[in-house]
Length: 336
Image (cartoon, rainbow, N blue to C red; front, side):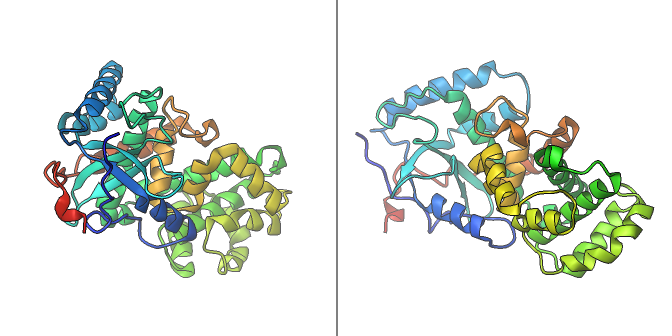
């Protein structure tokens, strides 16, 4: 068996969007567990097989963003097989971003993606492609964090996704009142800015009222619920949403039971995306459009919303600068 080198935490530390939360911390710990199988002379037979299968599947895809952006990594052989330093890893991939904010590569989780580390074979080469694309989407978010934090068009679509997802998850427990649905949309939008963007209560409300009321939420309905919005001040996490939905009589649910049902419906990756950092959410939303088992089908809402988010992300992914020299085959200098 070819030897695995240690991970590059000092050189390519795990990244997350804006601010820490418990799920972001879990995902970072997962990335720190990655060991990367380098493209050394000894590993050539393994990568010859993996690259051949990878490239063959990629060539059969229609011309779409997956083929375009994964193709860039494939052409430069900037993807790697990864395994765990200690225990199981829930993440499908590990991003390698340099201190100069360039993408140096993507490591794929051999365990999660059924890659044989001894011969490079896999029964899930399609999932390897989509896991790579998901990582590139995340890179587009993290490398362009300042611009994305200001991108209201993207944020509006993401907040709409959150609303549509919860509308879907609530199903028959949701009241038929349009007022309650708009109240849910207002709450989802408010929490989107508190949780993902890290805004304070007052500023989150001002964004809601300036950017969403009138365009997404009728002014007359918002005026009816406006007095309740200040009651949201203690809440700053998406995990609070079921409690808010129950406390404000938006739907008849038991918050604890609803959370468990939600986890079952959208799987761990969807749950982590929902209550984790923005880069994880965006990659999950974009990937939900594609024929992959990496994302629960429940995560798919309005196709126009998902396409709109991907189209905006395309311009950020197009700005990614690649560094194909950041990971040479001989990395002994990193193994301190």
